[in-house]
Image (cartoon, rainbow, N blue to C red):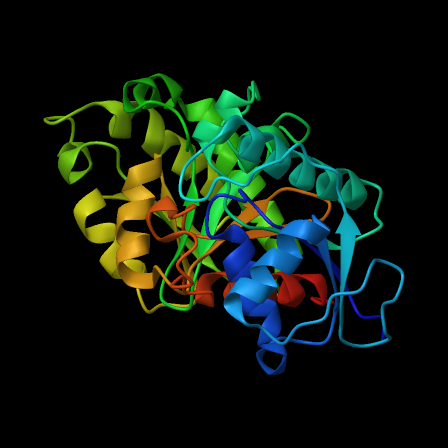
Length: 323
């Protein structure tokens, strides 16, 4: 058996990324056999291991075993004095360098997956990095990349994500929705052998109430759904946004299609905050991430829960070995 190579980026050094990464990797018995490669800094890792009191040895890259191994791909960074618990220019540069190196390595097919610890958009902005996060950067290279969130209880895919709410209405048109639906369907079929049904959330209250509360459903969303059905996609809707998630929760064969960020993330994080995983679809490699942020308020205290990071690692492995 060829064990997958899974790259893991440390995220913002001032947040909980390094902590949850190392805590997750320290729980070796709960992780599948794979070659785990951390893209980060030896000094940051050693300091974090000592602070947390972890029994974890991480050799440099090139010492992988045939089954389970953890190694470090050293990435240079600008941090001189680590600032915990707040965004900073140096932290932004470091987290971007870690991620960019892993991304380039995955594009070269030298690793099978990337698991990204959380970054700070404020830190990236302070460092002059123009992208609003991992998915935004990835979309620059893979224009049909899709943000989705997975857990045992609920699965959601986002038509739009990190844009202001007032711009969402400008994005709702039948052509773009149809392209999104079919792209999502294709990528899900490539990723998993399971048969999923897709449930579309409406945009307006009560899904427009037959045009009384908004016309987007009648003019744009329903025509796109009907065309996707004709292409063979098992898709239904639009459903009122306040009930559609009840139709998907606890149903492993259902994927909810949300039209904007908070429409998806509020119910998802209510049901699966510690166990949810962010999955970027539409890439030639696997990319997952925990569904939480940098948690600056608890950074450096040793209190961060690594469950979501561990789930992101395990889901990356699962997608890597799908025949």
